[in-house]
Each structure stands twice: as C-alpha cells, then as structure tokens.
Amino acid sequence: MHELSVAANIVEIATEEAASRGGAHVLALHLKLGQLSGLAKEALIFSWEAICEDTPLKGVRLVIEEAPVVVYCPACQAEKTLRSVQEFVCPVCGVPTPEVLRGRELEIVALEIE
Amino acid sequence: MTSGPRLVEVRANVLRRNDVLARSLRERFHRAGVYVISLVSSPGAGKTKLLETTLASLRGRWQVATLVGDLATDNDAVRLERTETPVRQITTGTVCHLEAEMVERALGGWSLDELDCLFIENVGNLVCPSSYDLGEDMRVVLMSVTEGEDKPLKYPTIFNTADAAVLTKMDLAAAVECDLPAAHKHIQLIRPGLRVFEVSAKTGLGMDEWLGFMQSQIGSRAQS
View (spheres, each protein chain N blue to C red):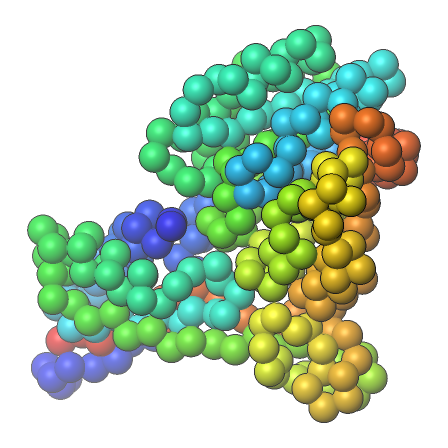
C-alpha cells in the first residue's frame, strides 16, 4: 500500500504547477493510471482525499483515467491492447508479447483551474 | 482572457523525483563499474538465504556489498554480515518499499570504485517495490515453491518488471506438491521469455547455474 506516498507526490506536483500559473485555484486534477502502474484506483482516491483534508487542495477532484496495457505483437507487427494483464499474448494471434509499449503510466495529465 | 474553469495540460510523471534520482544513481554505478542487482519477493520467500549463499560464493572473486531493506530490525543485516562482506541495513519504518533516495543515503561513505557488485534486498512485498526504480541493472523476483503457483497472476506488475526470476526452496517442492510446470507457465504468461532459475540455497540444488549467471553479469560490467 504505497498509494499514500504517491498521493503526497501528487499534492506536491499539483501545488507546484498551480503556483507556476500564478496561484490558480485548482478544481480538479486529471491523472492517467496504467494497468501496470502497481497502484489501485480506489486506494489512490481514498489516499488523495485523506491527504488533502488539511491542505488548500481540500475538495479538489482526482479524475483518474485508467490506461490499458499496449504491447507490440511481433507476429502481427503492430501495437495491440492486452485483453488481460494475466496474459501477455496478442489478443488476435495468441503469440507471446514481451514488449510493453504503454500501461505503466502514473502521470498528471492536466489540471482544471480557474 | 476568460476567468471560467479551464483545463491546462501538465504531463508530469508523479514519480519523477524518484526516477530522476534513480537515473543519476545508475550513471554513478556505471561510472564506478558496479553491477547492481535488486531482489524482490513476498516476505519469507528466501531473499536473505539466497543472498547468504550467493555472497559467500562471489566474495572470493569480486568485491560485493549489500543494502538490505526492512520495516524494522537489523536481523537480515546481521545474517549477511557473517559472509564477511560489507552490509548496510535500511530500516524504512512504515514505508513498505525502498526508494532511490534511501539507496543513495545508505551508500554514504562507501567507495563505489572499490566495488564490483551491489545487491539491494528490497522490503518483502510484491506490490509497492514495482513502482520504484532504484538505479539497478537487474531486478530479480523470487518466488518460493511454498507460495502457490499462481503468484505471478496475482502480482503481474512485479513479475512483468523483473529481469529474471528464481524459484526458491526447491528442496520442498515435492513435499508441498508444487506444480512446477504451472509455476513456469504462469511466469511466462506474465513475462514471456523471462529467465527462470530453480534453486535451493539450503541444499545447493541449482545454485551452480544461478551463480554462473551472477558471475557472467558482474563480469560483463567489470570488463566494460
């Protein structure tokens, strides 16, 4: 359970970004969370709300977009989206797909400010 | 200029501070010619036991040192010190994983130029360590035969980010009726092509192959 320390990192970055925009008021924070990020969405939202409680970010919404795992299929020679993270094989031809292109994201994509 | 709500793009990696530090650690290790291996597993899978045997074997040929992470106690460091190689305990308190900053701090005072190889034993945990780059060259995931063959399916992130896997406590495999083909199949489903070693650090089974692998990895760095 490292969602709390990750939430603390998000607070830090969001505060810096808001300050660099003239201390804008943050309404929401958009986060991209890859299926292979090692974090659970629900636990992250819970941690976010807990950690923001006594800060100026209290009430700021954390909007999480979950990103699927995208691999490279050597047989199809194309990017494919995994059907399940329990099975790293091409969903079309069934060939093993060791090369992960995306799905590890833990990224603040945007801030909604006013 | 509008004053209503607007969306501004940020694109910031949340773990950027750790990642930047890990990159600089990796460069430091490369410059000093140190090959760095981190070990991750659930608690009690046998990381310390494997390290005890590995350190005792490697120390005759290479300068090896170890950082070992735990929430509390220096029990593991005490065990590893018996191999007469440099060991430092990182006590994380309530933190369930190691971060690059802890590694950097623990290295203080050590001359990396005198080392060939550094092992980093992470806190026993199959979830959180997967998110934190420590600047290592290779991440090895351990899984004991007593844990159940489906560990890779339950913890895909850590298995998918590993560079090698070790099935430990092989001397118990028959007694606990471990389905080895299933264990291998599950590992390959999560990380196709991953190199897997079957060892018992207690009986020595499979240790030659594992130690040979370690020797060749450390040797490749020492010569470069």
